[in-house]
Length: 308
Ligand code: HPA
Image 1: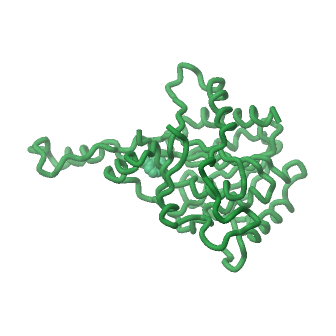
Image 2: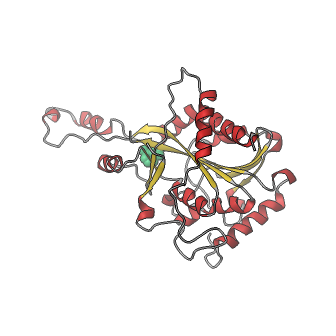
Image 3: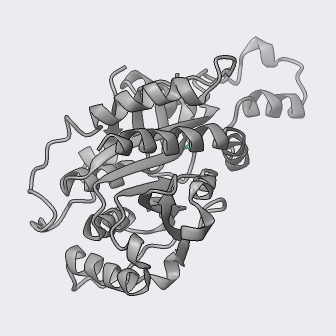
């Protein structure tokens, strides 16, 4: 439950005090936070078991809980590649679950207070099809995680977002990609525009075409509130979308279309269901691609922090 009378700053500090009281010495101040999206929780397996300490979200004061299948709901601390102190969110809370939009992004503020300087966000997204950015229609319309009195401890009232996605980190990702993905792989690394939608319904064909027309390359129900909140408090941000399904853009035939003549009801259902998105498909694609994703994220971070 959100204690509305407390500022997010005070609530984040309360969560941090709880975690610090329980964390071993070497993990008190993680450098990197990784948010694992649908089906991408395997990223936590890149943490060496000896250094691993975990907490259920339910045990952490003020932390939002996730109710989505495929989202475990635990915070895993440990050393990435045996050397980078990291914290991983295995599963996240979403706006459609009933959390307020600032509560969805609250863990980012906990990471900031823990001493994290870089956040990597991952998600499952639907492909709608290049500059690199997001479209936050809800935010543009005012449903925004930074709405309300500005918390100056975190950042300024009017943060710019034209520089949201760290260029140095993105450069590293492309270099690392060449190392970790075999040339025979049919997976491709793109940079593109992510459109945030509130969910929990997947988009209609008309909505998908609208998002495509607005310049979106992928669509999903998470990540952007966290990114906005992370940039407000000066964290470096990198985000990955695993394209788990192709969104259906083609219109369905009209009810009086000739192609429908003589078709049985089950044939009509088949026409309508062709390409339909489903959560199981999203999780399955996540499982299949998880290893490539894991290697890419972990190796990128190792490459980046090795040089510092
Ligand atoms: N739409 C919205 N969110 C998603 C999708 C989608 O097609 N796939 C995975 N998350």
